[in-house]
Image 1 (tube, rainbow, N blue to C red):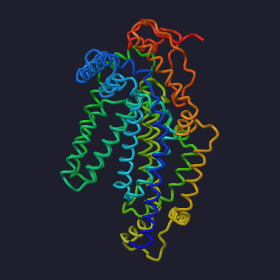
Image 2 (cartoon, rainbow, N blue to C red; image 1 turned 90 degrees about the vertical axis):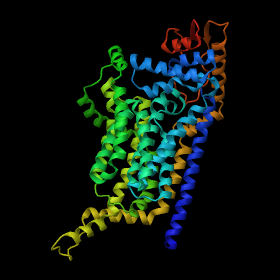
Image 3 (tube, rainbow, N blue to C red; image 1 turned 45 degrees about the vertical axis):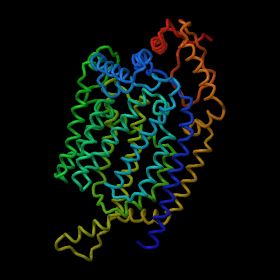
Image 4 (cartoon, helix red, strand yellow; image 1 turned 90 degrees about the horizontal axis):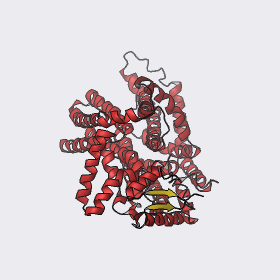
Length: 518
C-alpha cells in the first residue's frame, strides 16, 4: 500500500469515527426524551391480561403463559401475527409502569444495529467496499434517517406500534444478513451456523406484520434464485431459511382470525392484481416525499466516498438497470399489503420501515451505478480482448463511458472538499432550521429544555396515581397542559365510551375513565 493510500485510509478512519460520534450525539436527545415516555393506545388492550396475571401472581413464567394463551386466542379470533401479538402482550409497562424508557432503547438499539449490520454486509460482500468506508456510509445514513423518520413516536416510543413494525423489520434485516453471509463464507461450519440463525429468525419474521413478511418472501426467493444460478453448492443454506420463513408466513396469512376480522372490517381493499399495480404507482410520490433537501445533502456528501468504494471494488457491476428495477420492485411491494387489506397507503407506522428500505436502496443502488461507471474501462477492454478480429485501433469508449469517467474524475478531484462542504451544510441545516420540530433530535432537545417533557410526565404520573387508586371508580383526568412534539399520540377523550378510554378503563378495572371537560 502506497503512502497516499495509507493517508486516505487514515482519513477515512477519522471520518468514520466522526460519523459514529455524530450518530451517537444525535440519538442522545431521543433516548433522553424516552425517560419521560409512558404507556398508551394499544399497549393497554394487548397487555391487560398479562398485567392482571402479574399483579395476581408476581410470576414472570405465569405472565408468559398468559401472553401465549392470549396469542392463540388472537390467532383464532383476530389476527395471525403470532410473533407480534405475543411480544405486544409482553409490554414492559405491564410489570412496572415507570419503565417505558426502555422502549426507545430497545427500538433504536435493535433497528439501528440491524440496519448497520445488513447495510455494511451488502456494501462489503455484494459491492466489494472496504470495511471502514462502509462504516462511514452506514453511520451517516442512520444519522439522516433518525432525523427525518416519518413517524418518530410510532417508530421509537410507542411499544405496540414499534414492536409490530420496527422490531419485526429489524429481525428480518438480521435474518437476511445471516442468510446472505451463508452464501459468501467459505467455511461449511459457518455457512451451517448462518443457515440455522436465518432459519430461526425467518420463522419469527413470518409471524410479524405482513409488509415485512411479504418483503422477506420476495427477497429470499431472489436469493434462492441467485444461489441456484451462480453458486449451487450454497443453495441449501438459503433454501432452508426461505422454506421455514414461508411456512411461518403461511401460518400467519391463513389464520382463522384473519377471516373473522375481515368479515367485521368495513374497509375494503383492492384486488390482488390491482394492489400490485397501484403499489408501483404509490411508491414514486413517497420516494419524492422522502427525498428532502436534508437527504439530498447527505447523499451529496457521500458521493465521493461511494465512488471511491466502488472504484476500488473487484466486483463487475454489469447489471445496474436490473439492480435498480429489483430494488424499486421490492420497495413497491411494501405498499401492497395495505392496499389489498384496507385499500390505502400512508399508515405512518408502516411508512417508517418503507422509508428505511428506500434509503438503503438509494445509497446501495447509487453505489452500484458508480461501480458500473468506474469499471467501464475494465469491462470494455475485456470485451475487446474476447472479440475475434477486433480492430484494436478502434476506440472502445462510448459516450456513456466518457460521461461516467468525467463524473468520476470530478468526484476524485473534489473528494474530501466536497464531502466536508456538504457535511457542514448538513449540520447547519440540521441545527439552524427555523422550525425546531423539523428534525427529531432538535425537537427532542427543545422539549427537554423548555420543560414540556417533564411537565407531561408529571401529569401522566398523576393520571396513573388515579388509575391505581382503589378508592376511585370513576376516574376524571385533566388534559395535558404540555406535551413533547414527538409524543403525538391520540389522547383520551371526554367521552367515557371512546375506545381509548375503554382500553384504560378495562386495564385498571374502573367503572369509567374520561378527560375533564374544558
